[in-house]
Length: 166
Image 1 (cartoon, rainbow, N blue to C red):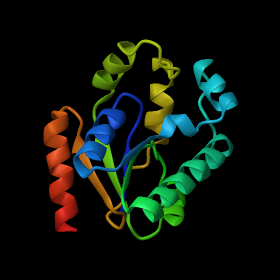
Image 2 (tube, rainbow, N blue to C red):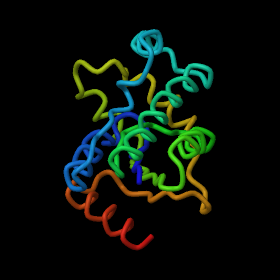
Image 3 (cartoon, rainbow, N blue to C red):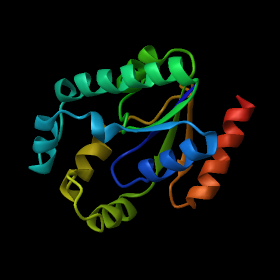
C-alpha cells in the first residue's frame, strides 16, 4: 500500500506523512524532494508550475513509490496531487494499493501557515494558484478528506481507521 498525503502548500502534508510513516513503520517520501531544480527555481521565483513541469516530477515520485511498495510493502508520501489526472498518474505507477488523504483547510489558515514557514521555496503568493488548480476528489477516487485543523495524532488515527475499513 502507498498512502499519498495530498493538498496545497501549508496543509500539513509533510507533518502527517512523517507521522503515518512512523506509525506504519515504513518509508516516508517527501514529494518536494522529487522536483527538478528548475521547477524549484520557478516556484521560488513566484511562478506556478504547469502540467508540463509536473509530469516528470509525478513520474519520478510514482516510480519511487512503486519501488518502495515492491521492496517493503508500504510507503507514505507527501505530494500536492492537486488534479485528478495527477492522482491517476500516481495510482497507475503505484498499482492497486494507492490511497490518498486530502488535507483541507481555508485560505486564511493556509496563508498564515505559509507566511510562518521560513526557508521553504514555496512563497505564499502561489497559494491562490494551487487553490485554483485543486480538483476536489470525486466519490470514485480512493481519497479520505480531512480538516487539517485537527491535531496530527487525530489525523493519523482517522487515516488508520479509514484504511482498516477499506
